[in-house]
Image 1 (cartoon, rainbow over the protein chains, first blue to last red):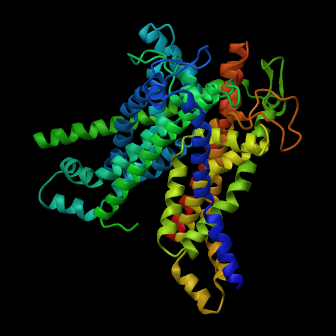
Image 2 (image 1 turned 120 degrees about the horizontal axis):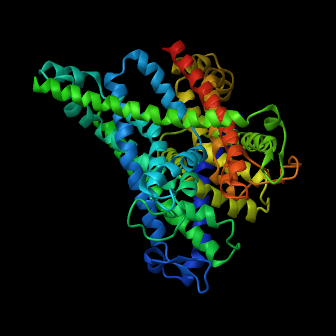
Image 3 (image 1 turned 90 degrees about the vertical axis):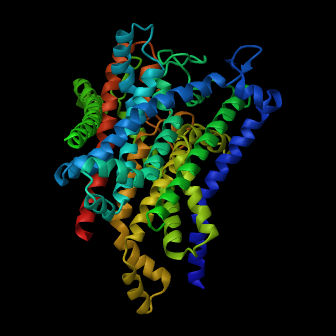
Length: 291
Length: 282
């Protein structure tokens, strides 16, 4: 009897995270809905003007979405070569001694808070970029991309390294046995075998970049216009929410519009995570791993 | 010959990737350490801000971060541990377990600012806790919940099945086995998870933006319903608000160094414990 009670308690508590996830979904929908009674969903997503405090206010978040896309794309250009390249180095070239130092170091670096990255971007990168490109301001999409990309490198590197380690040793030995050298083995056997694991790492890195708030809030510049180059100030979705929620009157249209942005952001990262999970599950089955 | 040339240049590029990564990450730590050390003093660590944020220290922000982090762990640890115990020890495999696992994975991927909005709508508004330590801790608790669950799960899975069976065969009940055998064995792993989540909670900014943080409070927080200053938010606010950018930037360097030091120390400790654990158990 007592045993059953314990089991019951654990079972109920186990649903907490699911309940919070549901709670987040419900809250986002509930708080976002009022804006869609005033503005059509199509106009909201594809509207080109974000003037939430003007009267009459304009709620078009295309500039914010495009800003997020640009910045995330830029970040991927930074973090994929560096992260995956570093993982390949760790896997193939670093000896046991180097590995024993670098691997934990990368994990420790992954825990640097985002606000510290943002601060670094503001005080070091901003003046540097401003001088380099003769810009009116160094706070721009490029700055955000660089900082975000750099920030995602340890995550991508760790996950990609794990994926490489899952590839069975026998693959490698078989490749050597037919006369391939190390580079051929790496590029034609190991990388394809770990390919979906590495893509999972990249998708999770992207998901992190698109949802990252503090760094983009601090270094992206904040202008809500559709960007044409990487050197313009932009305002990604997360930055808009974080910067404007403090001033938006509670329960007003602006408040609900910010929740609607959060809802869209949530759905994007949700899809990313599901895709990553699906790929990684297939990857494990392909290599004959359980789980 | 050509084969080897390709291999050598390929390996050289990989080496450059690793080097660039380490150099950039090193630069961040270097700049913040060098400039941050200039402002850090005993006074900086033990006093509150003075003269409109241009002088004095960051003691209330440090203390605020400690409160928020402690609160978050107190909230998330029982939930997370219970969830991990259920999944590893009790769970009948199947639909429910997959559903819970899906919930955990997706919760881990939710952008931090979305947690902040959830906290604002639910804890600040709906429950009426206001902008307070309580609201901030609960919000941060949800942020670190997936981390605690997966670390505890890993620790529980590492406990050999034979120990459980030995205990059960001696007539111990399931709960007695978990409490007396499994949990003590898994403790180091669970501790690692807790330490890592402390580091995460201490550095998170977006979840506390609208639920707990204040740029300036007079003195120290009096109850769990007070607003608090917090280290990460303090850095952000110093750089974006106020009227004396130069003096504020100097203080922000100091605050960043303290935050960086705390978080790196915490995660280094966790990773060290894990490494030692691995060496002992092979």
